[in-house]
Amino acid sequence: MKSTFWQKLDLRARQLTPFATTALLVVLGGISLPIPGYVVIAPVLSMIAVYHWAIHRPDLLPAWAVFLAGLLQDAIGGTPFGVYALVFLTVWGIVVSQRPFLAGKPFALVWLGFVLIGPGAGLEAWILVSAYHLTLVDPEAVLFQAAATVGLFPPLAAAFLSWQRRALAPTEDA
Picture: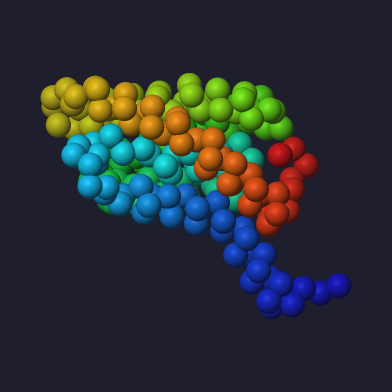
């Protein structure tokens, strides 16, 4: 049976979900709360999306889209241009390479993977920003940011999984 225009449009919209959710979390993460010093320790919500989609649907969030999300994160977050583009690509690359180990595993194991990857990505960002400014940036902020990001992983990952099950066609290995 031939697909109609609207069916094709619906399919394309669903397939844009990984990039759209990542970009939305970049924007939401850029909203400053009226808490002193919040901007420095704000969780990197979009990294959760990169991690999740790299495990479950890397075909719908390719490296070029991860790069664009990272540039958007840099632009909105005020980090030197390219820092989060590189950090997100590193996260994506590691996760895609470990996808056979992570895909289809219990949530606790997937979260443990993020507990390892998230702070490592924060360390990478810290090193890159410190190198850019030619001075050591306060590492305490990176620890708080990593803890906040890891702590917010469960509800966001649950939302992504729910959407994925309802709206995205399953793949044979996800």
